[in-house]
Amino acid sequence: MAENEDWYSAEVATFGDRVAAARENAGMSQAALAKRLGIKQSTLRGWEDDLSEPRANRLATLAGVLGVSMMWLMNGEGEGLDAPEDAQTSIESGKEILNELRDLRADLLKRAEQIARLEKRLRKALEGESLD
Image 1 (tube, helix red, strand yellow):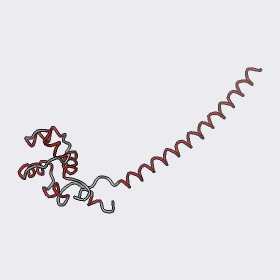
Image 2 (cartoon, rainbow, N blue to C red):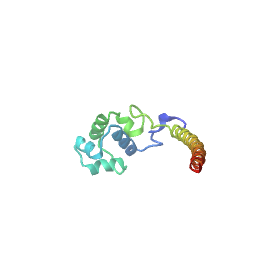
Image 3 (cartoon, one colour):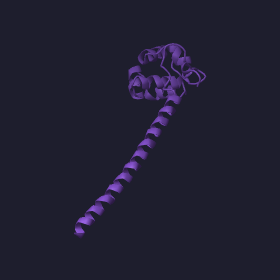
Image 4 (cartoon, rainbow, N blue to C red):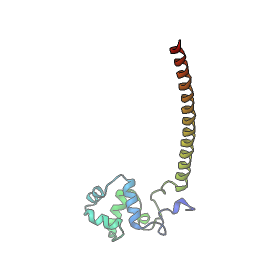
């Protein structure tokens, strides 16, 4: 995506996506948030699954508990969450890890060859001693 700020916009995420993201960001389970709001967990699940939406008074309470604005919950605009880590950054990090693993594998192969040479030298040395 070109602009990270649009991650939670109405074109990209649904109301339910934003509720679930804000809940997870707050470190709350569905059960904990439902209890805090005084609703059934199945009601909250319905909101997160975009099967239903809260009334205005519940929306205000939900926004307050999650520390985001009602507008952000409804359309992704206003005070809300930052976009998740850029996927491109994750890919680049993964490539760096793969490169480091390749370097380590090459180093291990060199060390294994060095160990094999030392082992061979040691066997020859020990064979020479036993012949005397």
